[in-house]
Amino acid sequence: AQLEDNLKTAINTQQLFMVYQPRFNISGTEILSAEALIRWKHPEQGFISPGDFIPLAESCGLIVELGRWVLMQACQAAQEWNENTGQNTPVSVNLSARQLHDSSLLIDIENALNQTGLDPSLLELEITETMVIQDMETVISRLEAIRTIGVRLSVDDFGTGYSSLIYLKRLPVSTVKIDKSFIDDVPGSSGSENLVKAVISMSHSLALNVVAEGVETEAQLSFLTENHCDEIQGYLLAKPDSAETLQRLMRK
Ligand code: G
Ligand code: G
Ligand code: NA
Ligand code: MN
Image 1: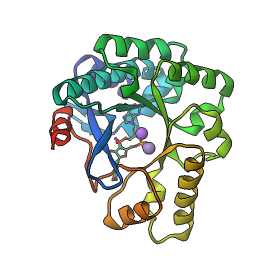
Image 2: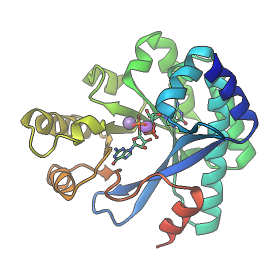
Image 3: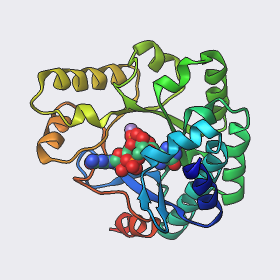
Image 4: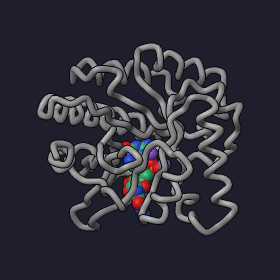
């Protein structure tokens, strides 16, 4: 309950902020989009990881309000960097399970787009397969409504859930992000190598774009290039940073 009270205070006192991590083409020469990631700097405790407080916000219900704030921040940032650079670089936002199961999601998205003026095609929402298992039909129709207004969807952390072709085929997504845990093991582990290759060819057979997450080494990049991965994200190319820093990178 301590952390919950702290989180409520954090929302109201600007202890929360967003950072952005770019996604690059496979050659690493071009920024194709950027993922919004939340950060919390507590005045006494210092940085608290979203890996710790997002699940908490999820269980106490604060996530819906927090998620609304994140959507607004991310759309605002993308609108600004595109106005300033003259480019059309989309932003992607991580959704949590509770947001996906909340009937206000579409309205929250429309509000964020309307208030910031961001074109819907420049917003992407990241979901995971495990989020859609419960109440699948409702969630799929909600996702289809989101897709209909022009917002894109991607499957995050792919490989850690059911990773089934059926899910990929039924979800109105355009991108698959291969989880970092598999990228960590390539090249080298034949199990992970085969999984990564299979996900890439399975995704391509459904005309989906494939992103490798957590790319840290040149060897990983070579493996992904040889196996026709489309995009890469990871510390090798860029860490998450402020919107201002990202904008400077985009101009280069
Ligand atoms: O940025 P970092 O690697 O510390 O993120 C840890 C976890 O928190 C990841 O699973 C990431 O998807 C999640 N996360 C980061 N920012 C957000 C956010 O704005 N909303 C949601 N729902 N999850 C986030
Ligand atoms: O669950 P999700 O895939 O959204 O988590 C993404 C998180 O992974 C980001 O918050 C980011 O901080 C982290 N991340 C991104 N690239 C790298 C990387 O190359 N190495 C490590 N260790 N973490 C990364
Ligand atoms: Na993500
Ligand atoms: Mn991920």
